[in-house]
Image 1 (cartoon, rainbow, N blue to C red):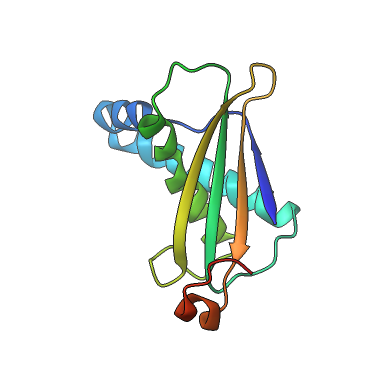
Image 2: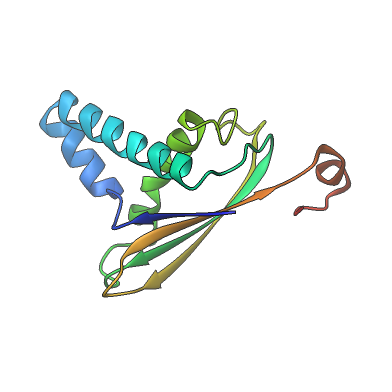
Length: 130
C-alpha cells in the first residue's frame, strides 16, 4: 500500500529553527503536519498493519537539501500513520525497518510512503516482506 503526501515536509533545519523561535511554533507545525498525514491516510483507506516495513521516497524539487535533513520529516509520517490507525504504534515493536530513497521531481515534489506488512512468522524467519 502506498500513501502519497503532496509537497515537501519540513526538514531538520526547519524543525530546529521553529523550535528555537518559539516552542508553540514547532508544536503547531507538528500538529498540523501529523494531522495532514493522518487525513491523507484515512482518505486513502489504508488498512491496519500490526508490523510493517516502510519505504519512503522523497521527491524534492532539487538536490539542495541533504538526505539527513529531508528525512527528519518521517516523524510527521509515523505519528500520522499511528493517529490514523494504520499502525498501532511507531516503536520498534511495530516498525521493522525504514528505507529512504531520494529523487528529484521539479514539477511535483511529494513524499511516497510504501507500507509493507510483515507477519510474525516471517519476521522470526528473517523473511522481510509479505
